[in-house]
Length: 90
Ligand SMILES: [Zn+2]
Image (cartoon, rainbow, N blue to C red; front, side):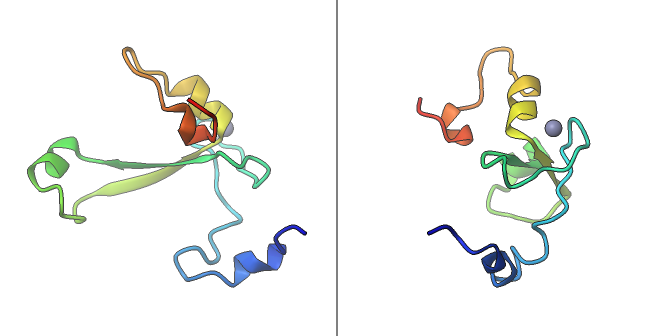
């Protein structure tokens, strides 16, 4: 027995009405729920966070990415994203 899709319309406001239009930051195509490990990437100032880590104010931006696009484009020089971010075992 799967989850009734209607449940997504009954969630708390922070989840409500935000389920249909997520465009991938890398390829600009819509992200479907068929990509269960799609990412939300929260971007904010490093130094503002460093100097005041408990503060949530200050400019910030959320971007979304297909899991495949993130794997392809978010390669660091000395570190990689943890496989668990994508629902994979380490
Ligand atoms: Zn994409």
